[in-house]
Structures are given as C-alpha cells and as structure tokens.
Amino acid sequence: MKIGIDASRAIKKNKTGVEWYAYHVINELIKIDNDNQYILYCQAEPDKWLKKIGERDNVEIKKLRWTFKFFWTQGRLSFEMLLQKFYGIFVTGRHGIPAYAGMTEKKGMTEKAEMAKKTKVKKNKLDILFVPASAMPFVHPKNTITTIHDVGFMKFPKAYGKWQRLYLKWSTKFAVKNAKKIITISEFSKNEIIKYFQADENKIFVTHLGYDERRFNTVETLHATSLCGVLTKYKITKPYILYVGRLETKKNILNIVKAFSAFNNNDYQLVLAGSVGYGFDETRDFIKKNKLADKVVITGYVSAEDLPVLYKNAKLFLFPSLYEGFGLPVLEAFACGVPVICSNTTALAEIGVGAAALVSPHDYKKIAEKMTEILTNERLSDDFAYKGLQKSNDFSWKKCSEKILKVLLAN
Image 1 (cartoon, helix red, strand yellow):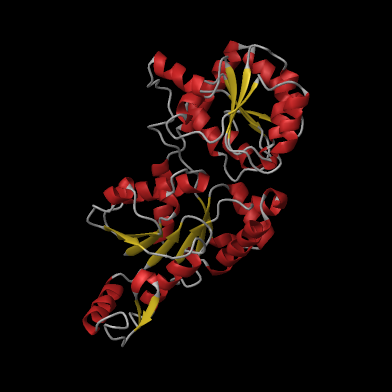
Image 2: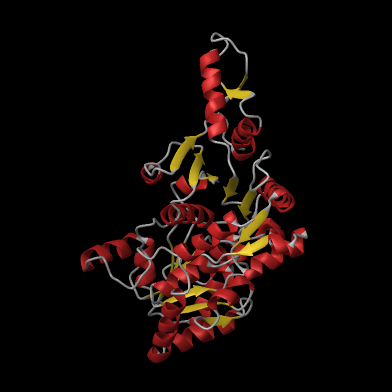
C-alpha cells in the first residue's frame, strides 16, 4: 500500500505536544513497517531528521511549496490530493500554483513535462492518507485517517483566540464527518469527541501516547558542572517542585502557585517550565502580591536538551491540570523516576491511576497537603517514584505506532 502522511508538524523547530506526536509516530512507523510505501508531505524544507528518513527505499519526501503563511493543509495539500484524484488532469506550475493540461512551454509547462507529471501522479496515488493532527485537507482520499488529540477548545473557549477557536471547531467537525477513522489518545478524549461532536464511536480508536526513552529516563547523562550550568541558566538555586506545560488557565497554574504558597516551605522553589499563555496575568499578580517572585521560577520555553535535566533533578512533579487529552508530561516524569501529583479528572485519572497521587485540581489546600505529605516522607516519595517508573513501561512510541499501523491497514 501507499500511505501518505502530513509531516508538516513534525519538522517544526520548537515542538510542543502535537508536533512531538507527529515526529515520534512518523519515526516509529517508518522503523517498523518495511512492507508499505510512504510519502511524507511537508511545507518547509525538510530538516536533517526528515532527510534521513527519506533515504529509506520505501519513503519519499515531497515538499509542497505554498506562497501563503496559513492554510497549507486546506490549500496546497488539498491540491496535491486533487492531482491524484484526477490522474494529472491538473498539473503544477511554478511556485506550486495550479496550471492546466495543454499549456505551452511559454505559459508554464511543455507537453513532455506535462506527461511526466501525469505519470508521476499516477505512480504516487495514495491508498491511505494519515493526518496526525485533526485538520484534514478539503480534498482527501476516501480512506483518510486523522488524529484528534482533544477538544479542550470546547471546554475552555477563552483560552483560545477567536479565529483559532473557530478554526479548531470547524476542522474537528470536518474531520469527524469526513474521516474514515479517527485516532485519539485516551478514552477520555474519545468520550469528549462523542459528547461535543456526536461522533460515531465505532470509528474512533484509542492509542495511548509514548515517550522518548532516550531522553526521559533515570540515567544522569550530565557531569555535575554541566548540570549546575543548566540549573543556573534557569535561576534554580534550591531543591524544586516542577511543572511542565503552557502557563495558562486550563492548566490550573493559579492553583499550582496557590498550593505552593500554602505549602510554605522556604527550602523549595517552584519551577514553571513553559511559555506564558491565556490567563497568566492573574497568576503573575498573585505571585507579586504574595512576594513569591524569588521562590517561583518562570523559565519560558525549555529546549528539548534541557527538559530531561529539569525532570530528573526535580523532587516532585506537580500537574493538577483542569483539562488534558492525555497528559504527556506526567508520563515523562514517571519515566524520570520523579514522584507525581496530578488531577483525578480528565485523562490524567486514566494515565495516572495506580502510580500518581491523584487530587482534586480545584482544591489547592488539598494539593498543598499532598505536597507536604510526599516531600516529608522519603519512603512515600520513593514509593510513588517506583510506581511511576513501573507505569511508564506500559507506554512507548513503538507500541503507539504499532496500534496506529493496525488502524491504518485494517479494512
């Protein structure tokens, strides 16, 4: 079979959840599947990783040039699908702009080039299109499969800009209606997609995420000097409690800081590792009002190289988020041997059960009590760390991708 994949998210420089998902799934699919042919579509110049993948005999990389900043999927990828659908009735002119059969060389294409393009289009006709994010192209093969990660924009609409919210709602609705199958990342997300978009549950398949075992583990790879350099870079000077993710309302950042304030232990810092998002001004005001500026570290975006260091050296990972489709940071913390406190709601209850200390995200005093309980009891802390390590063995990108491949190939 010939399988096309939208790889545009996988080569973004500063990756977050969806981008890392696309990267790892593509990486593993190519490793485990030598029987099918893959065409990986991208908008930007392929990076070293994608070029390396493209060296495999069963992989082709296609850069689809697009003049505009937005709507590459709906515009340029749709046009590529249209080319295949009509077997070369349409051809591609300069700069990715549509031209038509019968053009003279002066108008943009010779007859010889036109025939070559038609042949290539026939050769590259897809059996399956896989879109690792929910935004499907307008024009798509009948056998198109997409991943919808979560529908948090329905629960927390104010956390998204107006146009972003409208786009997410439209693209998800379009995917639910038009995709042959939908992959999602937790049973919670599956139920949310059914609840908000009346999706057919029989075409939704759950494949839990994995984590990068090379980066997130209990092996300390840095010398003491290098480790000190990373911590100094982020102004971490004491043992610390870690949060990783966007600093926004739906992540419950205000209650995290309130819980830390109620924890009231001068021996620790709170490290908030992530970029500022919607609603953080309220949290910033609370930090200022309660004179916590020297105790709360706001790192901004943390590089892929530095993030495992922050996990491995944390005394506790705190993630009482209000809404998660999966909660990948919890899994990463498990793999690094760090005790975890997370919410007893959404997908976090599903992922954290039996390994994390589950708490109500709405009660910051209870969160503070659990922090004290774990950090003042070494045996309890070690117990949660051990359970987390054991739980992390249930997840991997290989397992995730093997399940995805079965979904892609099943009739």
